[in-house]
Length: 43
Picture 1: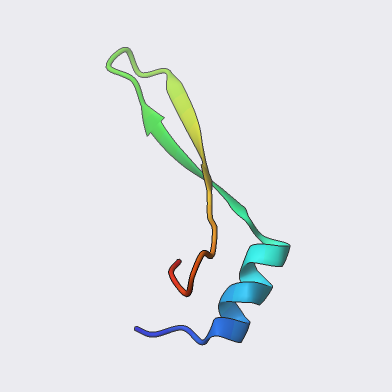
Picture 2: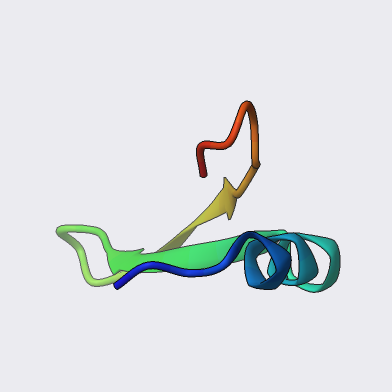
């Protein structure tokens, strides 16, 4: 699915960070922050 550049710019301004949640082998939670960026026309 292609997303327009204006939508990408809006999303990056309003929601630039996501969090990936996983479970460790002992069952404890682990979160990783993912930062999105737009550079030279690439997401």
